[in-house]
Image (cartoon, rainbow, N blue to C red; front, side):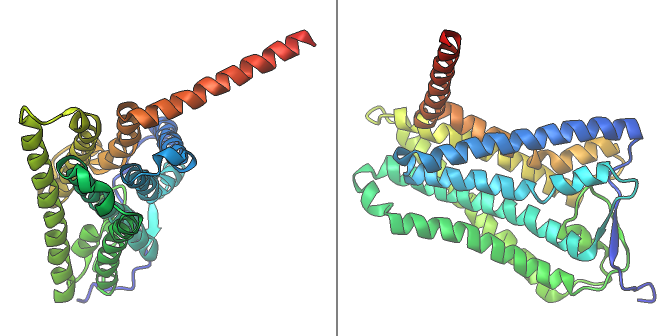
Length: 319
């Protein structure tokens, strides 16, 4: 405890690059962040504007895209500033906030995917009562709690870890996480450990529910008398999204806790940020290309804009 000090600044140690490499990384990172914003905003605006898409599945999808923007906002702006700065420091409060935003977004993703799995289960296995089950009130409650519970779980984790005294100031990652803050803390309270295990159990129950839902759906659609077109149309995008999310997040969490430290820094960085790259980009692409209503709406807007532009060009030529 003699090494305890009031630490106001933490040092992020994941970024060790030359100036030329930082310029390249900055350009690629900015491009990636712009792509994430463009793809997700297009899908969000399409769902909000088109009243025919005001159905439970599309409402959940809209929230999934909003959450993608929320989660990436916790990483990309700070990372872009670090690429332009010779020192990679963050305040203790900023570190806690960054960890809260990134990992509460991870929890929201899983909750929204669980709600989407429930929606598909009702739509395919109980189609006659779908509209009586998925009412506006129930959809609103599902959306509300899919945001509230993960935010609350992460908030409690952050509050308890923030009360720990620090015996170090080095975070061996490109961004902050409560797990790494706990590693440089002098001690972790029993309350914080209890909250961590509760969160693990809470999200494990989400995972089991999602797995059970899709296993049941697949078994239902294998039956000859069942029309599997609805499953292929709406559930395959969910499964692809779930796979990319699960693979990316599990890889980061498992490596952060059990991974060897003799791996190259570049590979460590890639494993740390790939869940902030692939799901936010692939989700709008997968759903935008696979779901017919969304694809047709986006293509229709592009086609109408093309017609309008041709009309403007013809009018200009006549003048």
